[in-house]
Image (cartoon, rainbow over all chains, first blue to last red):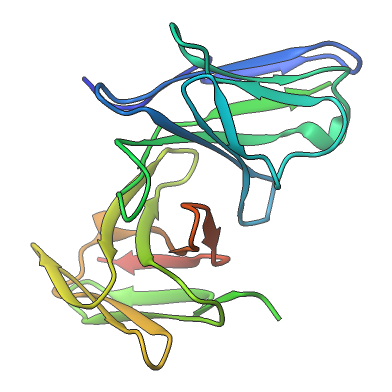
Length: 114
Length: 108
């Protein structure tokens, strides 16, 4: 399956720990997007990255959240010192380029904070 | 007011019925996506369109750019179509803005 791969599918953390969510885009895709779906809410844009560049991080909380997409390897969404309110489904999507390109979604990571 | 409004929020249909889900948006867009999400599952992109109409199997999507409105139609609905259908508009800059979703249940 050459689709967007996210891992882990489920992640449980205690308050104050760090969460790392990984996303491998589809083959040939160099653009990655992260979206968050809070319980009982719709999806919200977080960040848009190209290889080694953050293009738009207007949806990222100002503190504790960071994202990267290195030259080699998957994109990582990192949440430091997690709190209960970070519990959500985090989806990654990828596209081959910018402009009117369809975005292909992964199956998401369900993050639960104890 | 949300930038993307979907209606209805919930929809129950009998197997075989023709279904329409509507999406209105208030911002300038370069394209519109229709997405499908099963409970606890991932998101599947059904259509991306910027004008006119697209058809895939029993699914049809239309968009009217002047009226800022799109519809998703499902013909001959089936219980396996039960899912959440989400309209998402692509603002200039590739960012997607999502509607709240329509929960569809098709009964046999």
